[in-house]
Length: 492
Image 1: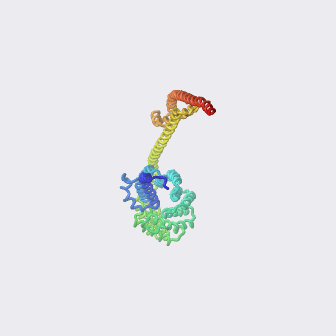
Image 2: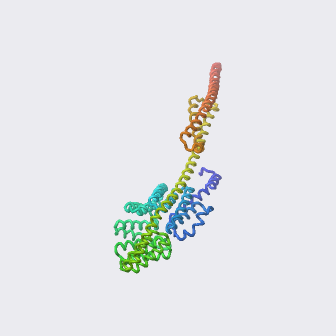
Image 3: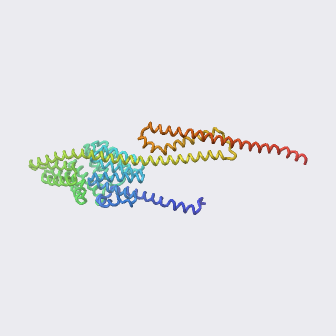
């Protein structure tokens, strides 16, 4: 038999149905977002602007749109937009209060520092890993570990990078992330001169079957395959994969991969003594890199052009390319300095947001403690009054003294929690002044406590005396009645 009446079940259902629907909606969106984390980036750029800033939308929908846009900014080389979107993601993650969302937000923050300050990016990724481990989703943990490995690779710590990338590889299940992880493992092994392993992971990266579903991932795997075959001096295979990467980049405007693919193909042509072909490819790569403000790719393109012009017997053009290469190196140094300043500003913004989140959490904790204090005070106060006004209970003064002492301590802690932010503000965070203020409050409470304790003790003494007198009177009456009962029995 159901222990709840039908009306109670109906009320329970209507009371909890909105919260249940909201929880189910969040779970569904989180599951779907796990599979669409790296959505096609051209859609992300054009389709999320209104959504992520539309306050009428739910926070989880805005968060998902912001992550999609941040991914688009990363692929498009738009670091500033990526950082501002990462800050929005942190705000939404704090509002939603989910560890998995905090992990995703801090991962995007770490990725935004990937090119400008990998060391700072690692700090944010370690925070993301902590949140991901609390969230307990293996695929997300693997994603963060993969991003940590990428930053170690960018800092030329290739063995550490391989360790982290392999940790992530074990947990990752999404094809897009499998593709990225294998690509970075191939590059790390290639940098260590382990070309067989580099080729193995390059082949393993080729898991994207539909170009339209993930053009960046497909183009990247073709680029990595071309590099691996070129390192093994298999020029025909290298040229094939470089051309496939260029075709995909050209069709889907994948600006991040295009210059590297053009330079890679140009180096293959140069090794085949086709200097003019290498010059054309290098010129094209330089134009694409300059259009997207990709200084590292511009340096690779000018290096290729300088060698190709020398091979073509054009020393003047080679000298011009060398001068441009030197100027670009200076620009890269200046850009690094500017990005360090930008990173400092971005870091300060993040610090402010973290302090705001910590303050909100501290206020919530303080509010909970105040509620617990009120409950405890009410319970003890009711207990004391029940003992005072009980008709039969006889309580000693020692018990009342102990209860009143507990009540005093609870009341003092309640006052402390209630006044602490105010005192902290007016004393300018001075521990000495705070201590003096709390000592003054205690000095006011203790005499009041003694008076209340004396009053309650007197009330209890008079009540105890009354209870004892009443009990004694009943006992005397019972004793007086017993001989009469015995005499009446004998007469019968």
